[in-house]
Image (cartoon, rainbow over all chains, first blue to last red; front, side, top):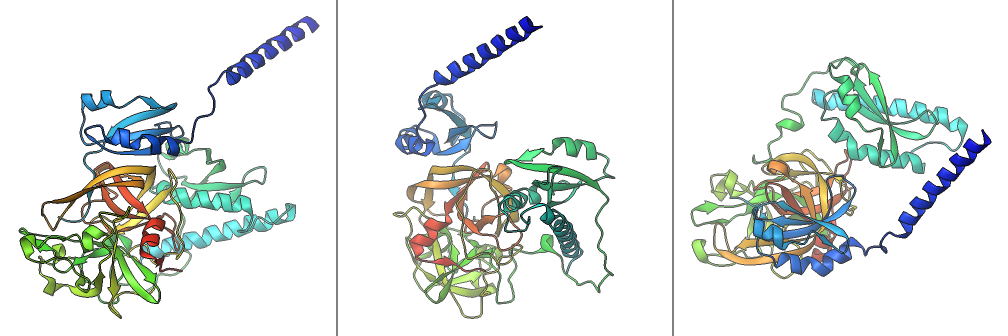
Length: 104
Length: 370
């Protein structure tokens, strides 16, 4: 019985060490996403067909990302937009042109 | 008062009774769990955020602040025990929201414990017209615009969104492109000028004939675009023409305070085309490119790149559509909501608002409210 308990203890310590090592090997803290956006918005807005860029969340509802708004679907634009910036995911979405909403 | 109003008021009283009962019981156990208690306020904040959305499901009868089995403040959700799909609704409700525990209570339908009154003609919230001419003093969230906004075979307009104060005077707040974007003689041989009439409803809703509308304010040209980061303009109220409390159709009075935007925050607006609608904020700090005309249905005046804007979910243009420009976006709470943004642009997937504090700062104004 004591041997089993000892083995369980060793196993728990091993798992704890592995988790700890995983945390230690994670990349250094990322910059604030708004600062990342501020440094890259001009670059993204210069891509043809891009009408906007903002800070949003991934579909999981919690992971911050940069969203790039496209006037229309375009493979060329998709390939020109980076997949990530400074560790943050960059996601494209087709929004259409953003226009003032008076009438007509 | 409509039956819906009566129902909501009765519901509110019922919940208040439940809540006060809960509080008085738990008060014996420690610090009183009243409205000043931090944990209670946290639950109330979540309640204000989710109630309108969750109650769009007919099976959800109401919400209240209560406590869980550990006497910790929690959000109570009342679900109709007679609903055929009550189980599915319950499974889909979260057990926790923003760190606040959510408790489900099956209950019978709530009923009003009072006799029927006489019943008034006219509808409740759903029947309010945002395009009809109003008997002054008018409420805002209504059709309106510049009286001469007619050119190139079209007439234009938007929404008289809200009321602001500068010094001792009150002004209607709307957008630059609703009040003063005619900057070339072009198709109507005129340009927007300070002192021009601001009318209700807008030309688009009176067959393009200003004689069928009423002057409620006079334009004070601010030229916010193309150089500033906001799309705003104001009209000085003509005495007696606009409610001095700044009431907005289907929203009522608002707070004089403002609040910053946050992702997933519930918001609502009252506008000319889509009326009272609700959505949530999906993005912040947006850089957005928007192209403006030089008059109604005219040529391109300039393309403006805004920064620091608020993005709101607008699938199918259900939250914001053409003619809603100028609407004030407020937090989605029932009483005296705080202003969050000035809506001005969008597409069929996203709506865009200027942060309200940037607008007020540009104008040197404050919101009129309680």
